Image (cartoon, rainbow, N blue to C red; front, side):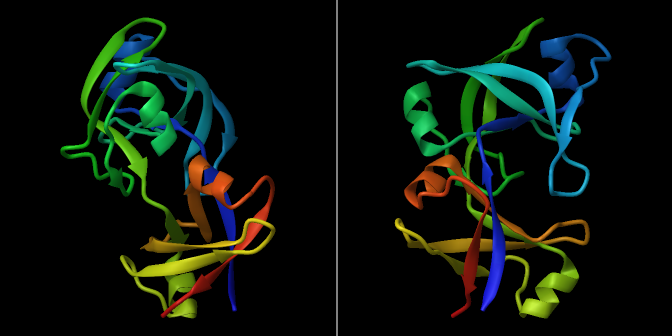
Length: 190
């Protein structure tokens, strides 16, 4: 039985250096709150507001460091609250994704593409993937036990040297499984 730690990925945003400075000012640097489990990423103290045709989401946490594309990751429920369309995508796959307005303390940005609902996925180092007999891009199932037990299908395996073993679910998925604290899932390979 292959057990894996489950991490819940709440709504958040990644910025390019240019877009960060548009919203926060020239030479702005993100202040780190805590390191995240995946190599070099951190949660910052900084937040922005996402605005759609129906509503807004305040306090959307910025994840650092800056990236090559600005990308906002929200749950499907969040898209209804915003009134925005966002495709289900792996992080980094922003071409022809959703549009959203972003408001920061010193500016606004009309993001033409970059709003996604993150596809559930597993992070594994190359060694962990080899140990489990899994490959990058492979889809597996992950079972969650408990009073709201369920099996998540179409969980994509992502492999990189600096990854730490974990499955990432969004808040809608975590709520569906009744996850409210540290939890493990069971990887099912067919």
